[in-house]
Length: 159
View (spheres, rainbow, N blue to C red):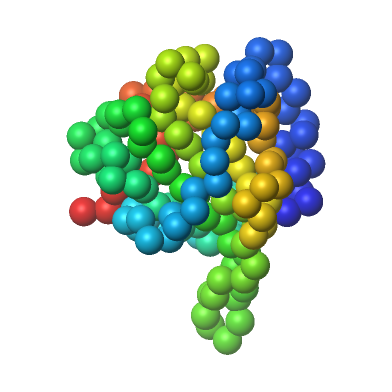
């Protein structure tokens, strides 16, 4: 997790959403009861392994699930990226400690400068320790811009 903090702190924004906007993104209590969108593993040889290596589970609220099906997300859509350490042993890979909970919230008015999406990350199992704050434009949206045609979302619902 310290690596994620170091990498995120390297992205000093030139222009970023208002810190108040990022602070208004709430921890998504109960997100594991939402619909599971997909899971994946980023292995050690991946270019993003230092920051995002591990087991990823993605969840969406009802509005986000509709967005996945339609290919465009309405305001109120929330996508959660639950990142856990991966532990490989005895020909299995199991979940370890939670590294972070990433949250994307669609609100075109509040987050116009970042494609209508607000971004926040919460450290480990904390619902209050924020990792992104006012760095959303560079720490998150800079990568998500490449997915403009998919409404800035990397994941796709599994059929």
